[in-house]
Image 1 (tube, rainbow, N blue to C red):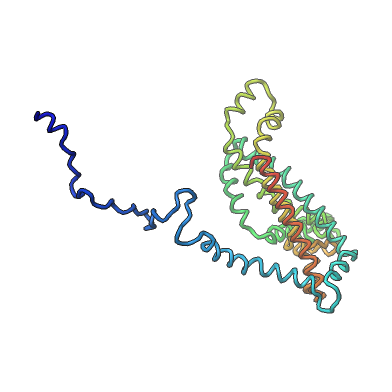
Image 2 (image 1 turned 60 degrees about the vertical axis):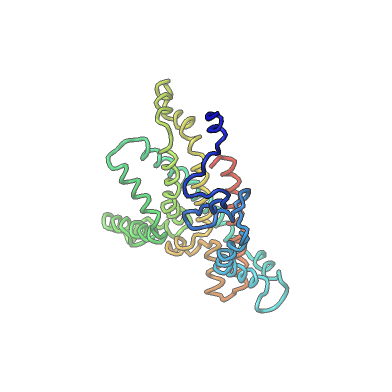
Length: 318
């Protein structure tokens, strides 16, 4: 009987908790937020809609970035001398200077991107897979080089290959000629060289990051099976580097399309790109409507290329 009584006796409540009392309040998160107010399904706050939290950053973005762009588009559609909304577009598109600037911009950007991809891939291969003293220092210098302004590299090229630069000075000193043979910096080829020199590290940086993730065992196995270095690069390294090449190449392409300082500092008077045309229309000719039209075209090309890069990078798995 005593054993049955003990089995039927109720289990006593824990200390500090009275029988029939209300449960403890919901636990608090480390930040002090009420966890009970969060919807478990979507994490949405019942007290304040999520859209309200998005309003401040969206307002700042619209004020700082979108509003100036809207002013540029508005100015291109409402010329000061009157006329229709698209008269400025028709006038600019029909001009020979715009067509030449557009063609020059595209071929310089494409040529510089191709040169940066080839040169950047070769240099990144050497730094990552060919051991030599100072390789890590060179890799760190590339990170520092990315912070340099573009005109600084152009100025350095002028000191070397300019009309009164070191190369022409050495030539005139040795031969006694009135002037040296190096005058290519004021031509489109000089602009192309300066852009390749400046933008190549922007391709090397993602490539070096991709090469650091590559398993060296794959290279050792391929070499052990008798594959030559060129085949290893083509079949093992290059497929792993394609997402990094796509990322670096698309970045360089967009930056070359909008490059202004290199063209200006080389002194290439016959090289007119879209940014240079905007500068000439706005500052030299005070034709703000035409300058805004060219700016809208430049923005549209840049945004289109960025959208294309996003599609390509998703398919490449970048």
